[in-house]
Image (tube, rainbow, N blue to C red; front, side):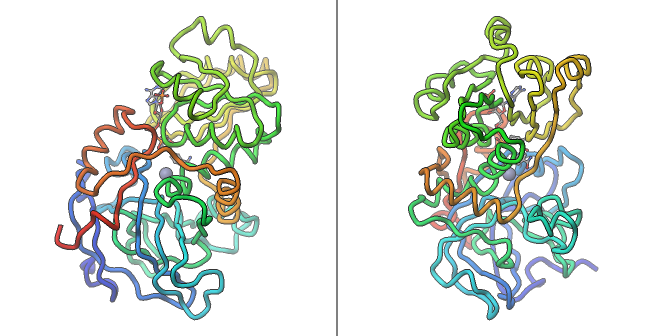
Length: 361
Ligand code: NAP
Ligand code: ZN
């Protein structure tokens, strides 16, 4: 028989969860495990809203389990550490991203790529080792094994740092792995949402020339003046796209919906790389002729390993990179999801958990 979420563990906790694929979030009481020997417990201060939360809430990928308490861009302040914990102490600013567990022994884990471990455990909506459900960061308190906890650099504001734990590493990792981080290279970023806007900032900090490829002409001014992009293409403007054919070494595609790949392949130079990080609910059509005739590569990438996530946020600290955020109270979260569907956010919603999530709510 399923154990009641409130009784599963000794520490009382509360947050907002969806009960079914309507995705509507409402107050939810549950429990967290006591701080184990290797665990870090922290008070959640802010949590970003990733498009993945929206897709999972609505069961767009057919893998969601309910009740579902999302949130994997979590930052807060340490309140307790286990006896074996060496990296963190009470009062530290920390974060947790997309995963809270992995086997620690497979090839991926041995190569600091826990994000590709077949047994990786998601921060919300998965089963933990003890069989209990994992609950994400739209909640007051978090407990995680220290291996999966990230230190937030002192100079970064916590609200703007939260989205780096998913949006940040998801774009930083492929820029590095696929060698699209060399000064003087030309990289395209498709979609200026949560992921796309930090992709622009990271690529610029690496010394790369960046072109934004967007469906929203009204994002042009900000992309260039605020995010630092060098140029801007409206993807639905054939003339603009034609003029940029064959100019890019690589493209990071963050689009959450089905969209044509042919125009993007056309933008690549010979041997250029198109890296997909967005997750449309349906398969995309892959035109083969432009691939083979230009020896082009289409690849995918998901978040990053823990070592790389720490490296990414330290790099962000050094270059003063944070997400542009709209901070919202928890009771605005369902409206925020409606706006996210319409790409109506500049560029990431972040929930002010500490000041707005109340146990009585
Ligand atoms: P987001 O903030 O909603 O941004 C997505 C952007 O895609 C939009 O701002 C829009 O940019 C563009 N877009 C939306 N609909 C479009 C359409 N029909 N055609 C063309 N462009 C469209 O989402 P996000 O949080 O950045 O996440 C983006 C995607 O990455 C989601 O699918 C999410 O699930 C996925 N994701 C993957 C990973 C991973 O590990 N691989 C991690 C996090 C998120 P413009 O207005 O500029 O066109
Ligand atoms: Zn995410």
